[in-house]
Length: 78
Image 1 (tube, rainbow, N blue to C red):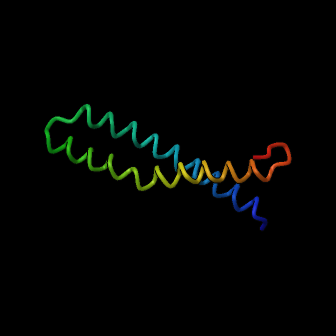
Image 2 (image 1 turned 30 degrees about the vertical axis):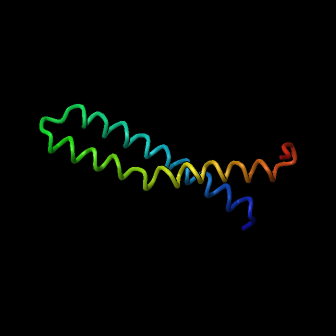
């Protein structure tokens, strides 16, 4: 397994994680808007705040992986 294929794998897995996070965020926002009580809203806000655990590493994986693959490409030089 080459470095490029490892970076590509990390990039793709991070992109999947980012899309899952965005879908969960949309669902949670809808649940917050339809909350009947303050306790329900607080529960979904806590869940919403925990999405950062997945979202930030996924974003960094997509960004760093993409930059690394771009740098290894013959067309682009930084």
